[in-house]
Image (cartoon, rainbow, N blue to C red; front, side):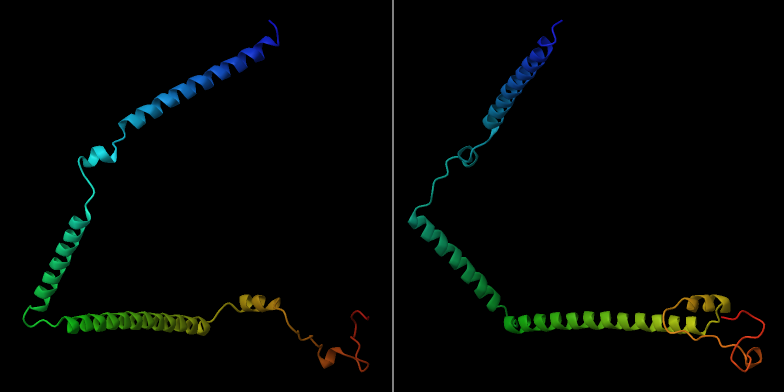
Length: 163
């Protein structure tokens, strides 16, 4: 077999696959477009409103709104403005209560944490462990001075290493 023949066949096959894919894609796209329902089909014989019909519809809506308002206002023993003020006051009070409750929870939590800290301070700990904790802390350190009995009059150590 010829080595140049194989790549040509592969390229030709890839080209045919691409053509088939495009043909199938266009078929499916046309099927989808054919199944779409247009607005005209959905609504049917709808026609735009004329200016007179539009004005009549607006007037009817306004009349209905006015009738509803009159019904609400004419209910005996009902003061709408007072009810609105009452609702606003209730809302403010509930917000204040929530805020007070939240602050109280924080205060209680802090008290609990403070008691826990006091209990931990009061509890005796392991002395060696406490010393180990402070052993490597940064800061100025005290140098250990030998006892007077260990020093000679010239401030040299007796019997040990001499600098």
